[in-house]
Image (cartoon, rainbow, N blue to C red; front, side, top):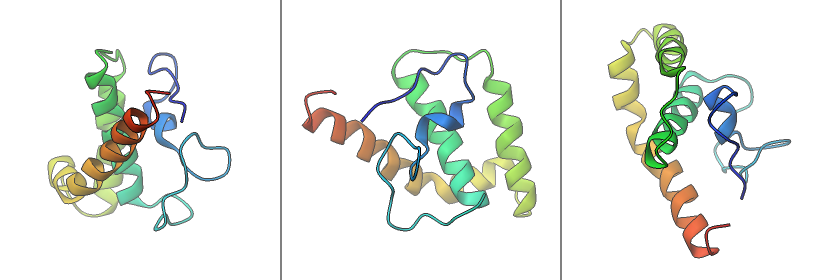
Length: 105
């Protein structure tokens, strides 16, 4: 499993699954841009950057990105993040525990 660098790319590209992605497809991914999936990807990417000590100069962009999808669901950004936090935990566990089990590669 390869993770792209946080700097110089939109953070949401770090967690893309499916064709052309860098992590295995998850079973319940929907095609297209689903608000929950987009927020899970963006929030997970921000958490991974924080975990590895990368502070993003574009963190405000993550907030704006999440805000746009939250608005689509008639939620505040905080409400939207809280609704998907369990999924974010699952993504992080998959990436971090999967990487650990495979020797960190």
